[in-house]
Length: 292
Image (tube, rainbow, N blue to C red; front, side, top):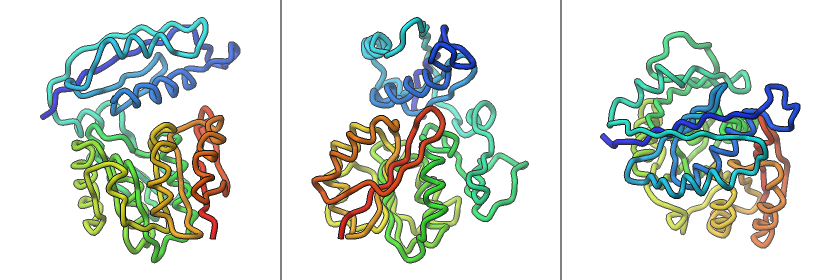
């Protein structure tokens, strides 16, 4: 099992009601986005700050110090502490401390295999996340879930880029997608996605380990990427090439203020904004359509 670094970040200076313009949710959301770009995999916010995890081999103290110095908040103090967590049963840790059942859109319940008390919904997804991102709790994931619940997916080809736990690919398959491809760059997350698609009775989902270079030759009616703004804009050409005329691209992992940057990156490839939603502290789900 992989050893991890557990990073504890305690935040001081926020106001519960946001009177000073900064809430705890704002700070932890920004921290999670910045840490994700440095290789951190999982984030557990709470009333006092956040706990984050990264594989021990990927951790760099100098990068962390530089990141904390770049935080865009005045009068906010973030105290960091780390310790090594030896490889263990991450399913058990998540179930005990962090992951609770969640219902999205009144149609989809997400829970772990350990949970026994959860609502009955049309779509029942079992996710044992280990160290992979994607339990439906974060605003980015839940907004894409809401889009997938509203879209007609029967008979469609769907690609889920940066699949994490596989949750979005699994829902697409449950809603009748004809073919679903899930791609994940992290080996541990890719293995976790494979486990979850089997647990949910959809072993037909094609799970691949790799990056956007794997998209060559693939085609999709619906393309999903819940990653971050920089990766999405950097790989936009590869994403757009897979999308059929009239197809939709569901993008998240960034803020509403980032929409112009993403739209401008997509425009040269025949994509334009169809709609977007906003949830939590301005996290957005942007829907782009490929022009005919």
